[in-house]
Length: 258
Ligand code: T3D
Image (cartoon, rainbow, N blue to C red; front, side, top):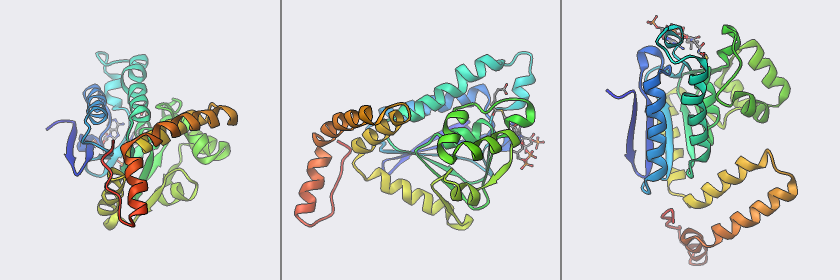
């Protein structure tokens, strides 16, 4: 069985981290395969939303620590450059919404890969752990960039330095994630949300994502110019024309991601 599976249904690319016996911790094979799966989702027109999740009781426990102590293993420098930085960059640049469906523990790089997704959903029993400080490391996979922006400097510093286990409910309260669902509702509700995204005007969502990516580094003036540029592109899409036409005809729009 593949360590990262991709199944396409109803315009959603279901990407599943699949080493449940190791809590979906990343070894080389899984990290490179996730990159390939994300590339497939980016390039296939039929995929209009991505649903990233973990098999079994974890989203992901981050780096497979047994690989790190293996003398034949990749070593620290390679792990970031070959594994995690390309994963985070791919998720942020993927021109479609990426939903992280966190149904269990997300630790270390696993937590930060979830947090770099566009919309993070969690089951009530899930948790997020910046496990790095416990083993003498710093938050990677974009953790030092995303966390302060999501929850503010103080909360981010506490969570990163203490390595606290943050429950899904706390994470939702502090704005770290979008929504928590009761465990028994989680699978259905999170897939339903991805299904809604997959029926939306995909290119407008991609432009929105692009604008968000740049907002952290841009001045207001620069951002207004970027919005103008992207809005002009959005205005030329078939989905925009369909949205306006459907509104005037008092019917539901039928978007095609074009
Ligand atoms: O050099 C570098 O490492 C740079 C890269 C950094 C990126 C990172 O992600 S660093 C952070 C790495 N992750 C961690 O430190 C988390 C380690 N795991 C845990 O703290 C705990 O497993 C959890 C809090 C996530 C879950 O705890 P619990 O009690 O629910 O499960 P468990 O019993 O600890 O784990 C179950 C199995 O998964 C167990 O295997 P076994 O004994 O049944 O054969 C455990 O060893 C394995 N496992 C869990 N996490 C990892 C792992 N195996 C390898 N690597 C892991 N990260």
